Image 1 (tube, rainbow, N blue to C red):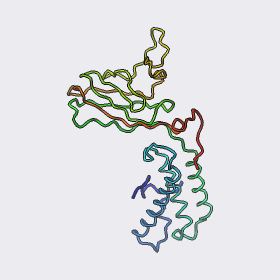
Image 2 (image 1 turned 45 degrees about the vertical axis):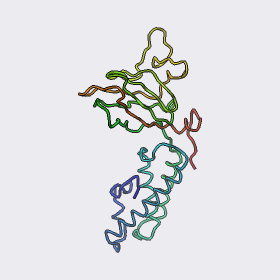
Image 3 (image 1 turned 30 degrees about the vertical axis):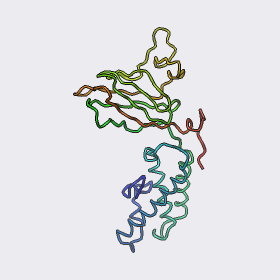
Image 4 (image 1 turned 30 degrees about the horizontal axis):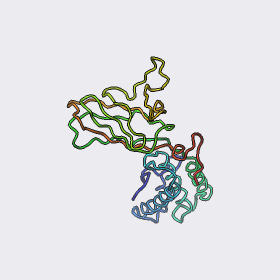
Length: 238
């Protein structure tokens, strides 16, 4: 079953496990089934709110774990499985409202998946994405292809061709000299805002040198505001 959290993580703010508060009339398996069902409902509730809101894979978003837990706690508190001695309605509302509020205010920064090295690569060096900038990153796939042992071409499926990358050096390398007005020392006539780079990365050489056509691919995701053409501020999520 898909979930953002595990049963072991489902506990109240006091640190008390929800299992301790389930009816003793339920067997251990029945208790876990009750929790799993509530967790599935919470997962579906979250995804229904996220649908169409972002292209960023939801599992990249850590805060969804706590939101799911709060929905699960609220669900179980209003169900027929908790002890009668609990003030169920008050605490159920607390966890439900907290989850809804966090989900409504959720904002997605730009992000990148882990780079994928081509299976046929000769060189065993690695690509690391150091930073992704929400203001400029787009939803696209970047391909880094070796031109020789020390240089890679850099091409975005939307942004097009960027300047050549040199291995063992942060890319793009800042250049504040010679009256350069661009933040990162990049100048391309067909991409006038390239100086405001969408990411910083580095390809490190390994024990075996790269050869021509070795490559890496990286999927990047725009921030929520960028995807919707809004430069600042949060979006209201229904």
